[in-house]
Image 1 (tube, rainbow, N blue to C red):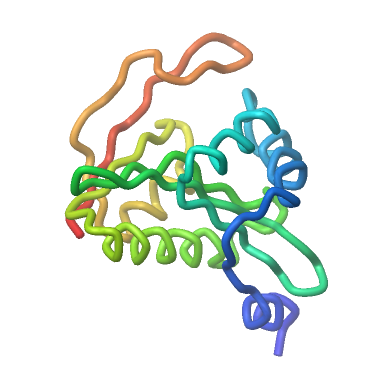
Image 2: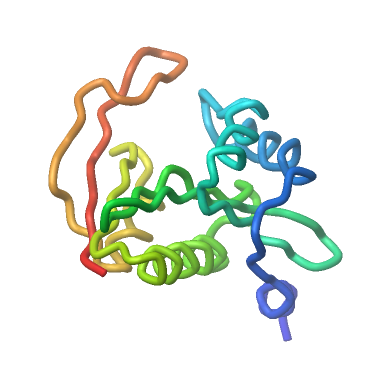
Length: 156
């Protein structure tokens, strides 16, 4: 069994706890030009959003996701895997978790925004049958200005 297969077998998705906030913020800082602060992550927990972490057993937390559900729909606010762990199926594991959570809490549709430059994320979402329904101009901040967001949706 390869190291990647072994790692994937020991991976588990669990609810995010307040003790995960600084680790999640560190992953944000590695993955994004304009990351969420620890305060934003803490606020998501305080607001009661459905937040989960990808825990790789002895190796700790390497990804997370935050989902808002209400009024029959869900909004995937964030999904991120530590850059050096991307491409091993962890993003799909997190996505499958939020899709189940959204459906279990009565959502009939789920929405998200993604940067057009984030080809790996777009492939992940298209592979899960998301479809583009719009574009938000200048939605994301970046080091060199602003970037649009593609708005994607999926029926649950």
